[in-house]
Length: 232
Ligand SMILES: *Cc1c(COP(=O)(O)O)cnc(C)c1O
Image (cartoon, rainbow, N blue to C red; front, side):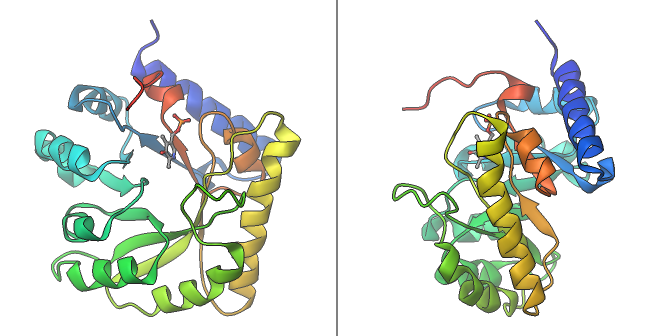
């Protein structure tokens, strides 16, 4: 069985080849290891292999894991990539470095109010429903600019960019379309006065397509930790 270290190396190779193909420096893409459903030992193994940024989906699971890994806290960056409920914002504002899944002003306002003064501003992305699926979270592209402007004005948040979870689809051309659309949206916002530097897009199945379209953070779970047990 491949070790977590060797799988991180494999994923880093995929990122490097995609950057090469896109004419981008390898350092322009950050690998976020999505450790949801994985125990603290798997995270420790990834840290031993040099990984520093971890993504989590479920707030309580993440808090338990952070407690078990408290000795490593200064080295690590914790990113919330899963859906956020308003009754969890305080815990998130206190414990995480990044939140990728902000899709309502109310959530953003609470995160800003609840971010402890002793910590740097919470780094956030605005989640966009780029494939237009009714079931997915994220704001419709037409509503992104208004929300982004409101979020950018909140004192204890730093709006970094956009995040999307496109509908799973086969074929690199088809995979590139939603990533391309997210990139265009970011460029449009920047041309209209915002200063965003982050595109959080690309998972195990579509990492290459995302990097070709400008992803700056790829969120990878399966290719690093293996298949997850199904969560009911
Ligand atoms: C689970 C998850 C990932 C990682 O997906 P893989 O296909 O396992 O790489 C990335 N982003 C989000 C939001 C997720 O929930």
